Length: 187
Image (cartoon, rainbow, N blue to C red):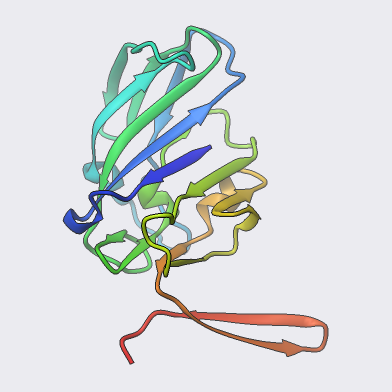
């Protein structure tokens, strides 16, 4: 489960927390992707990740070791891991992340770490909009409850760009299928 703290979006930062339960073994490798669907080049998304912390499910600080430019290793004490980090993003396009006072433009590989060998687990994303009541979320992720979205695994999540902000929706039917278009504009 991922959750996003948007309180510093004005400075192009999000605080992201990933919580994973049911882990076995003494260590977990946390990785930031270095590729993005449809982009056939390596990217250094981890350069925009800092202030990393690892905690147990009970809130105990865990030893966190940087393995290389895009991965960390954390000890596992109680089967749970909470990994939090600050993400900087000021370049919204199909590959990178844009974070500002008007929107979040999240390309998932450039935004979210994952735990190696846990990619087949279901994924949840909580986007708390209580401080931004006029904002909405456009994504292919399934909304399972208010501001909670899910994917069957990390690959689906990885390929689900998400736009958060004041969105103008257009919906129409083609046969029994509803087509939705989410537009963010200034008029």
